[in-house]
Image (tube, rainbow, N blue to C red; front, side, top):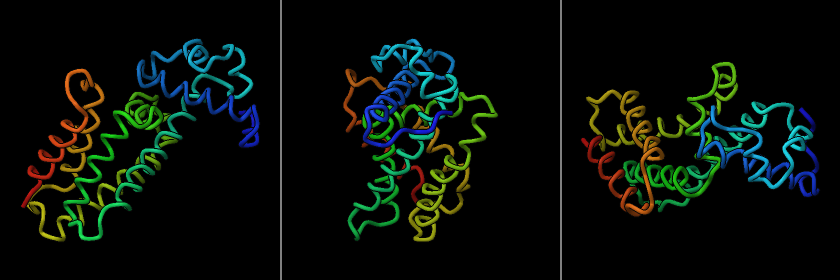
Length: 201
């Protein structure tokens, strides 16, 4: 892999544009359907130019996924950091639901690409992103643990299963949500109600 160019150079801007384009194509076509020609079209570069920055299609995809996983975590952490101090543990879980859905559906091609693409990656590629996945899941695990400790969610529920069901349902919205058929606000409000009332003590 070629070394990353200096952050503000023309070369760096072109590299970021290529990674951004890869994320955009991944969101719409998935891992198997992503072609360098399509990435080049979105990035407005010649396809061979991509090889100046990345040794292969998979190397580019891995970069887009890595950026996306980091961005998803950052956006949720920022939303939680901005939550009012008097929010309860379950209120903070609701904040995370809203941030996750906003990130997945509107805020970031990178985050959406990572969340949707990681399960599609070959195992050898996915293994290299497993720690970033775990770090993100740990945020959610902590939120559920805090709510259980506060007596705000049902302690008879299996916490690990609950976590996977919640994240699975939230991630699936990217497969069916169409902004022309309903507002994001409605999706978020519905998801928060289902999640929080479903886990409630």
